[in-house]
Image (cartoon, rainbow, N blue to C red; front, side, top):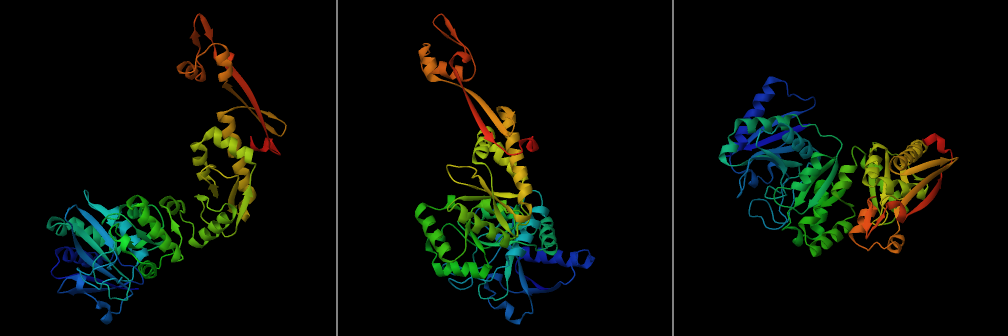
Length: 435
């Protein structure tokens, strides 16, 4: 792979990074098989280098540069170039450069790993030129003042991050919303396969057109989009969701992206399609799944799932993380009694799921076993009984519910006096196998 490393003679940060890259390459430690670097220094500002790749034989261009800000903080950043609207800082209005999301993802993760104390590592939103290049490219920068631009530690960290970058399997994404430092996109990328290319600042989103959204997706090679919903008003959010849908790519929430783990995108799409056919409009939650080449629906007793959730709540849902399955939910049903698993593991998954349910119920409830039936016994306060015994509604009800004895006049009312019992039997064939 041929990589062009480009800096400007007038940029102290670019010179700093480039000098450390030269030094590290000379040691031989940072040599990577199949990589060939071209070192290019231009006289002017990099943002005006439209067409720089016309005379380059390169597969990737990495611009080594400085970052300046009206609110300067020590930061190391990566971003692709382009202009959603005007072109005050180079390039052409309404034009985006081809992104290299997997490379940006790899470099960003290295920046987070190698950054000097006191520095942050962030994506920046798409901004400034050059835009008129056909080779995938991105900027890697040191911010945000002359002190950081000439910091030897920062220069060495960026150089190491670039040379050590090993792009892996990623999910190329486009992003919408947020400030100049794309905080949410950065958080997602640092803990998932989500690799962003073009990201639009909150102020740019209201002016985006369907054509621009298509250009963002095309120049990124995006298979999905992420919207920072907290950064947009309702009208803008509805508009961008409609444009993303029209572009033919799914819109994923941050948790959905991180839930994917190392799951291949093609496997995810198969799971997603099956989930939508089972529970249209439902939410999909993927747990510990590395591969799922042939997803199938695995059904479980609805009463058992409901009882397990009622007994364990969020702890039960958290325990599902250990089982390689996908579960579905709706606002009124946290766990639908139909999960998705790979066909080859369906029986094993069903066994593990039933075992988890039984364990959750027996630990948190009063239970008994009668042949193939799991019996759940519960006691609760009966307000009618309490009122009949003269207990006024209010704080005394709360004490009785907590199992405390209360005084009403000269009479003591114990919890047993106002309780009613219930018995629920759940039939589980071969119950003894799950206990």
